[in-house]
Image (cartoon, rainbow, N blue to C red; front, side, top):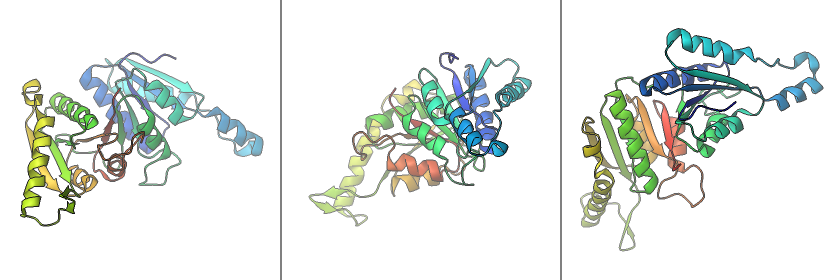
Length: 287
């Protein structure tokens, strides 16, 4: 089944995590007036293997699960354009495939088989491989609806795209934007900067502020309705962003920052924020 262009794609499996993701996706599609596409991956290969090993315990293929989800969405949002499919592949593979041309893919942090409180393999794989922004929603951390959008920047090209995504989200939601630029280990003349207030410390802070100013250039004119709070902090980036996410409605990170290895699909900062944020997390990468 083809996915409508610019659709908000969401994975559903009947778990509490996917229910939280579905609620977030419905709000996003309604806010942006975009189509919503529901995907329930039944993983037929797994079901066939389970039936061969123990026919009595083989789980049934629940094709009506996605239809029930669609009915639920339309009951609450009758004007929303909703399409739905029950695919036969693995959830991560099928969601990544459907990310091509989608506005975003929304997944629950925990699926049916995930350990409670842990980030599931499906959400992690989709965040690593999707070709559009991926929003990971943890049911226990739904975020504060009227809280700010938080975004981590580091001067890299991908963090510039994350900043643009964050500005757009803040504008659509009518909430402030909190921009966090965190630095931890920096070198001046071959020496690690460790002493607050020293000339080396001041030099590093000034350099970071200049990089941040370059990243921020032009966005205020493009989004004059967004009130942006900008801060440079000496902290591990993942700690700073996760801490700032408390009371936020959404945290936005680039898939890989300037410190990541070339070819790395998901950087250590974005990976840590996915695990520790107090609100939904959007992972942004170049299309």
